[in-house]
Length: 487
Image (cartoon, rainbow, N blue to C red; front, side, top):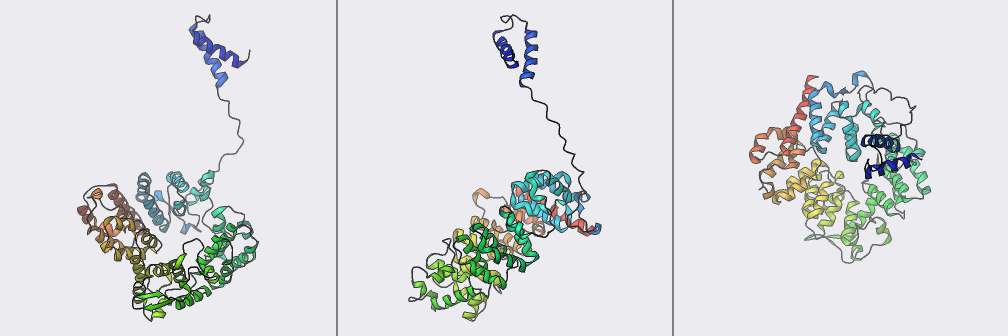
């Protein structure tokens, strides 16, 4: 009789009862115990001959080149370590990013006990990886090499020589990262490589990656390659090349767009308007104009074509044409019937402006709803904050709070002071009465907010988790400032 048959017989005996099966209860239970283990017990694991892992290295930064510049273990700075433990318990990603940034600046790496939690957060939230990678140290990178899911953190931060041929064989974002790293090391070499390989790539995604790599150290010498990519049939390749070309202020694209703006717009008593007999009077662009417009559908119609032309010239085009400064030119564009389209185009090149603030304010006022918030989200952090302060005088609480949520933190001291004044001067919505604005306390400058602690708690007396976040941010600043003073 097989083992399985014996087990089935014993189970049947248990079902009918020991006496009916001509046995005793104790004997039946003994038999079931023995057969159950034999029939259903797990097998012993096979012997493993893999050697034990080597001991973990000392906690130091991979960027440290000598003992004098080595990063310190956070255990030597218990206040900073204690704050990190509280941040991880609070599960606040913004606050964690701030801790990592301050730790990196102070050349401090995280305690080994927090490394699994940090690696887990970086795995679950790819946006945290740059911040987390900076505080792992050599021990964290050793640990990352043990688990495949943590492999993103195992490479280290020291740039190595990139084999361009091998870079093209890498998967997904790793390919673009490798090409951009090589571009940082030798822009001319990567430019020559892209020029040689561009037409050989059959897949549009591969050609788009090659063009995207040129964004690092982009300059006038890259213009011929980008112009060549404008003729690519793939939408992604064409639009990526056009996006990069628009950041070159003296390009042939800028000259073509300037000529269209001169020819297609005239200045009236009410601002710039489309000339009735010129190119924008036509419902569809000609092939040459279409080549200089995004193919993703965002620049269709007269308004889209105007925005595309305005995005292709630097703000100096308008100051020169109007013979005025940035504030005067922004005010003039804001008057016309096509203000929204023109200012949205100008907003894409604000980094080229001599004074970007009036352009940002004018563009924000010309837009409404989600378009307004999307434009604010694309501005540099401090400029976006100053713009929100300027244009939010007539906003309600919800719109201000939503706009502030688009601003990356931490905010500058000046922006924090201004936005604190703006919040305190508004009525709280019923659902938020007495509770401080979460985005203000999480992203505002910690020193400014700490100095205004009494004002904040008087204006918003409800004790909430936001006040706990602010208290942690103050402790964080104090922990690292104390370390700097003690050195």
